[in-house]
Length: 198
Image (tube, rainbow, N blue to C red; front, side, top):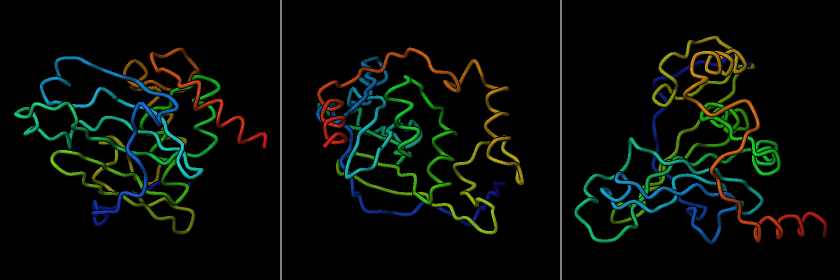
């Protein structure tokens, strides 16, 4: 499938119809407690995976939309996440093969399955936005604003991912199963396996 970028597709305000990741609902979680998180009063979850209503959601910290006014508050409850409703196939690779997909792999996994990528931000209140793509004549039309700066129109998804693997192999986590510092919530994993068996 070839990819086309469209400048007319913009971020839209949306309804938050899933729970934000927490230590109680995360299947897999990566925490951080560095100067950056303390300065902006961010929650300690940098990224992770949840399963809600039979849909896997992968959350990653969104530095662009992080509320900077939060530094003046006393509570560590601020967050800014990009949320990818990823496929079961990609989620299972993450859970069972310790395979950590890169941003663009999740990006195309979501859009090629006609789902939205969400931006969820908590400053004083929680705001939710989303980006959508569309498929026409075997072409995936994506928002220009969140596409990679070196992406070219009319490339296939495979060509784009391969290009990133070659150019940014030292920067992006991708393409090979490997150990990470993600922590697995074994209780939630057991519940998932039990429901699969019933």
